[in-house]
Amino acid sequence: MSSGRFGALHSAFSNRNFAIYISCNSLSLIGYWMQRIAVMWLTWEISRSEFWVGAVAFAEICPLFIIGPPFGVWADRFDRRTLAVVIQILMLLQSLLLFVAIRFDALTIGLLFGLTLAEGMIQAAYQPVRLALVPNLVRKQDLVSAAAFTAVTFNVARFVGPAIAGVVFTYSGPDWMVLFNALTYGLLTIAWFSIRLPPQPEDKPPAGSLLGDLRDGMRYVLARPPLFALFLLLTINALFARPLTYLLSAFTGAVYNAGPETLALLTSSVGVGAILAGLKLSLDGKTRGLIRSILFNLLVTAACMAGFAFTTYKPLAVLLIFVFGYSITVVTVAAQTLVQNRIDDHMRGRVLSLWVAFTRGAPALGVLAIGWTANHVGLKWPTAAAAVLGLGGLIVMLKRRREMRGFFETE
Image (cartoon, rainbow, N blue to C red):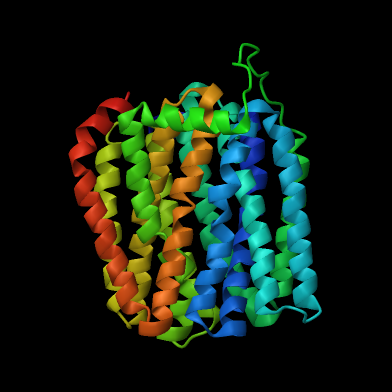
């Protein structure tokens, strides 16, 4: 396994810290997806409203705009492992509170919205810290494969978690799915104490004010036009394409008149496509050709969205959402890998916090707009319109492709 196609992946796993992290994080992500399926279905079951499905999804991702950037600054100032441990403990407590609310039949749509908002705030704090930590777990030459395989584990969990969730829904209930997630957070917290990070450089620039450091991060991006262009391209994709994955419970109930098993099937189909995409990128371990791949797969993403919006034939919907999962993962992982590979480490937390805010926070606006519109006219036309707008953004950004290749594709 140390040569040929698997050489880059084998090299990444030879880093002890990365091997420990990825093993425990994989189980934690399965728990995360089980809880997410539970929340998605409970939202629809309690409210029977496309608007509330969109609103709860908005609560989960909107904190990325506000919470993420300050934690990106702190990830550059303070010990990243300590921050990760504290945040993991908060995740555990949130899951336990949700478990108690479900177990004792005290869950209302308002309480579910509040607990999801709390989870969104904690996850928003964790994302820039986690992304800044990954390069500290591997050697520089292993960063591309490590970043891609980290995405593979997320998407394996996106498949495995919903598959397990469908079984648990059938024989038990959503409360046990949430409790399992809490236990996996505890396991990952313990794992962080086994990870020994390299010492931070002592010549780091002195810390300024929080707002000043945030401005420095923005200036860093704006001073590099190809980096800003990639930010903008992925923000457009996040605004118009990513909301579809948050609205699958509404499609399940309103279009297919089905239950949590169908929701698990659709979500798992996204996950299978994403697994294949992540494996391809992690085995390649190169940056050459990634810009072309991003642009092509943005086109595929828009086409799959439009097809999914109009079909009522479930097997075709499963196929389209599978291809959608593949293409959107190629776009997301390839772009994140390019950014990780090109930014300076002393700016990593700040730049990645902005990356998280724009590329992962933008779906909050998209999902709320689509959910509100769908409550009045149905899901078909708002989803198709989002696909067209995403395609328009791609066409506008095509003129920057050579500039982005020259900046990012360094191998």
